[in-house]
Length: 81
Image (tube, rainbow, N blue to C red; front, side, top):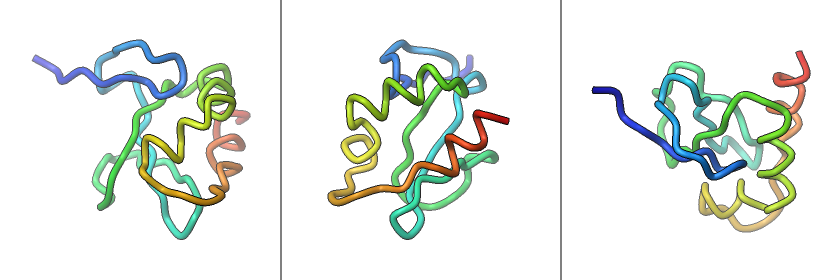
């Protein structure tokens, strides 16, 4: 049975395979496509809608336990295609 994770944007639970893992690297939020990067990760539906919700709720810093400003433009650009 596949593990279930919660999207930090919409807060709904979903199978791990339908979510994108994100981690912090030098104050930048980056996608961990293969889900193997070290450190605390958070999960997000790969949609702009969930990204915007997470940004508005300031969920990145909370979920990744980072204080201070985070640069999430890499994730935003990835979702914009």
